[in-house]
Image (tube, helix red, strand yellow):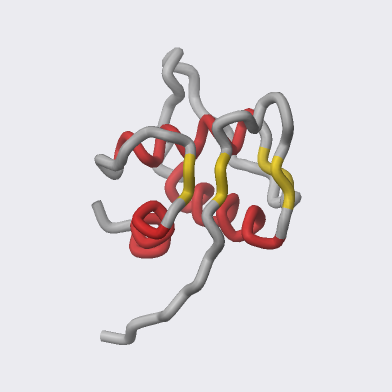
Amino acid sequence: MTQVAVNMKTIDLRKAELQPVAGDDIKTLQALLNLFLTAGDVGEDGSPILPLVLDGTAGANTKQALLAFQTAAHLATDAIVGPLTWRKLIEQDF
């Protein structure tokens, strides 16, 4: 098995719907969340979460997808992408 060393920055999306977060790591986050979303996950209100646009800006939709991922991966649903969330996103094994 090959191991990949990744040094991704911690991303805080707790207030993303009010103040979007931008950066190169956001595109990576959005792409990895889209892999998860292909399973047809739904938001807290039961509506489907649509695939994210890979624009490098995280707002309310990216936060919603992240919270759904954290819930499915049995992580703290805190809207913060730290080392453990990055690892689960990259592995997609939960």
